[in-house]
Amino acid sequence: MSVNETGSLLDGMMEDFVRMVSADDSADGLGGHGGTWVEGEGFRGFLREDRVGGTQEAQKVTEAPRFLLVTPWAVELGFHEIVRRVSDGTTYRMLSDTRNKKAPAVSAIHIAAATCERWEIE
Image (cartoon, helix red, strand yellow):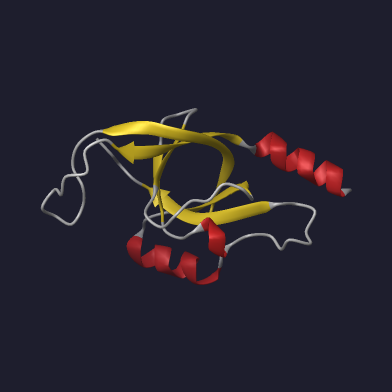
């Protein structure tokens, strides 16, 4: 498979996501934030269940599935940032940072990834 074919395959797997931004940054008294959420900047990415090494073992204890969100290189997602998949409205909270999981600059495929979990927002 050529690099162009690989890039096309990745592009075909991508779907629309949006960043969720808290419109009211007031503390909820439990270490989080209350208020309403609004859609922010959109980006493309794809999710897959994260079943790698220690993460899979930890899931047996927590029973909370983890996912890997793969994005183009330029999309930077930070720890605890909230995103929503447009197709079904499911929200996810980032558990890592895409700046730490980027393909090397010499790679022909410029992707980054972050671990995330399903997350309910009101």
